[in-house]
Length: 223
View 1 (tube, helix red, strand yellow):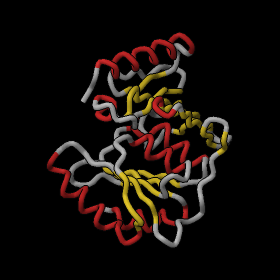
View 2: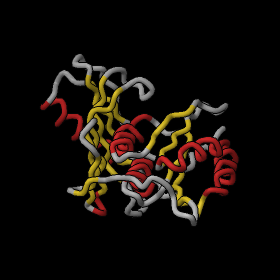
View 3: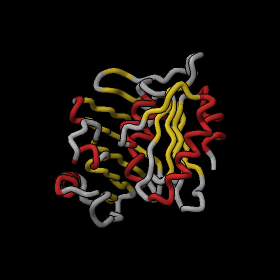
């Protein structure tokens, strides 16, 4: 789903960035990519959680990251990131080597989950052909889960790992703009983030978690 608001917000962000940094590249969900000439690319999701936004569910965010190098997540280096959740007036932000923050509060993940198990978050694709695999993945991770949440916006799920609201997150099928900013926020908060190889549907697996559960969650969530 794409709304007029998605297009308008991306156009506004793109125009502001072009005015401030005309040599930089741009990679957004709703418009044509521009490689730029500076070696820095801005990766933008104007409304992450568009379906939530369209239905009046207050879990959606604006996600912006500055990355260096190739405009591909497997090879870029994230430099700075911001994820803003308008309904909560929360600004998650990070800079490489300078930590992650929620507004003015520095974020640090816990080392391990509680004895009750890990609170996990996930998401599902819109293609019915992928639903069985997604549900099977949920079943496989349940041995370590206290419960599972599905909030409908990957950037919020990932920032929730950084903020200690959930212990881990897993999902196949994300696009680069879905995780570019929040991945840096997770790692600067002391969490782990990794992209795992695509499955037979061509969807890469994203996993982010606190250190104590990352390896087991990664094992259970694959393939």
